[in-house]
Image 1 (cartoon, rainbow, N blue to C red):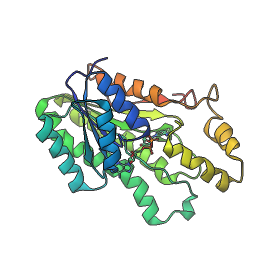
Image 2 (cartoon, protein in one colour; image 1 turned 45 degrees about the vertical axis):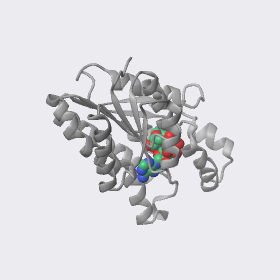
Image 3 (cartoon, helix red, strand yellow; image 1 turned 180 degrees about the horizontal axis):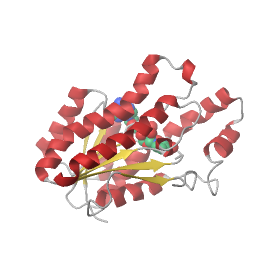
Image 4 (cartoon, rainbow, N blue to C red; image 1 turned 120 degrees about the vertical axis):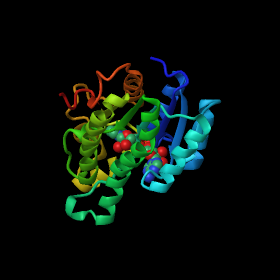
Length: 256
Ligand code: NAD
């Protein structure tokens, strides 16, 4: 599975799942653009990948910032072949406790970010007559958990955006798919464990073993490597046969 000379933009690529995918794409021959709101971490990540990779400053909720970032990608490389819209955050509260600003923040990073980055890359992919867009969904694109209303809502909505772009992009050589991981031990998940324990009145161990891994077939976390392998498979798939789909990588937590 090779990405030789493919230009791959990864939002939220400075940490966790995005960073592991950046490593995997670079190892497969791609030129990786690490696009992250944390520019120091983005630059450090790009540097760690070696020559031919860059970090760019991008808040995926800022329309002008996203356009400027993708303009820089085009100025630097002349094309864009893969977009992985991956930047994300989590907040755990009951629906009635979320402020409207908190709701909008979570939804905006996941859903507006996916829309804005797709809107910015699609004209280039259509001009090239080729391109792949991947959205980092979640098992929460397919089912709900308590305390995660804006996250679950936004992750479900990504399925609709992916399917729509799959239909619009099919004849123009652009494929769109959604990766749906189960729980992966990253800073995003580490932060939730004590928060959920407090909110649910249970121990952190119970959060991990019951809430997070209780429905898996083997009580194992999905790993960043598992997700990166799936991303590379989708990014390198050779035809429109695989578009408008989601792939769940969750140790059997969710089976379709
Ligand atoms: P992480 O916290 O390790 O990384 C998230 C990255 O996104 C960070 O580098 C952060 O700086 C960046 N980011 C945050 N807000 C941004 C913004 N507005 N603009 C640009 N960059 C921004 O988290 P992770 O666990 O690696 O999550 C990555 C993606 O995977 C998210 O979309 C998340 O919902 C999804 N996901 C995670 C899990 C899990 O269990 N960790 C499971 C399923 C899906």
